[in-house]
Length: 370
Image (tube, rainbow, N blue to C red; front, side, top):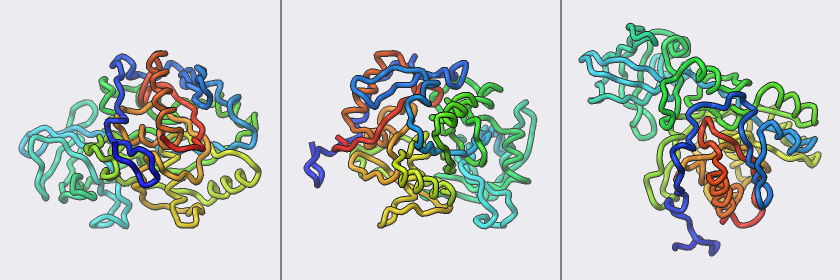
């Protein structure tokens, strides 16, 4: 096995593979948000708990940081002018300052069609009942690698998507989106529209759990990271150092940065609710001095074993796909061998996996990430 500069074995893509029985991939959420299971992975052996026990596992003075992004109904179905079927997944609604015409009507989208539409052509998208809804003009290709399409909608994209779009369920969820998905593939505190995938660790929180956390003296704050469809893209290279992450927009408010500084000064811990929150916080601390940089910008941070964490002490997360960048992230956070053991335990105990599945609580490893 290749060796890194610090003498530790270098991990390859195959090291992050595992066999998962298909029946453990959750197709629907638990009947109640906080009724999900929670694997307390902070101790050895791990402890099987219910999610509603989370407040008792945290300490007064801890700070929970949530991702308050809101999932948009980003999936559209329709036809090209030639009559061929097309499906769009809106990756990003552009702010007017970044548009070609500055009218607040342009988006970047993934398109699936038998043949790529040409610039200047028109796409006719359907309403949820199948009737014609609106037309969009194809302006050209876009994105870092030209893999997206630049579209112009006839009016406000957010309003059109809300009226005619579908919930962008992940590819491993096999049913068509319904009213329950509209409610449950969204956190109870979702605020800023823009995500095309949910920050799934936060889906377990309900009003009762949030009230119990506040009563225990656990504070909360928020970041915004608009999760992109790239979160589901596979890693296609064996040498994971060669993988390039998709970019995502995030914002760290001044109030959240101040809350983190106060918590640290008082001896409290920073608890990231989900990998998207962790990515935002660690991205904000990527400067040379490690201080949090507030404001909005893009991140392509790729966290693998050996990464130096500067902000997050505790992570609440769901279980992730084999060979995924998010599995690499949690392996970096809690330790590679530790995560392997926890996943083996979760499979043996029939935990439910992925977006609608169960959760796990982790502490940051203080030793080598391997």
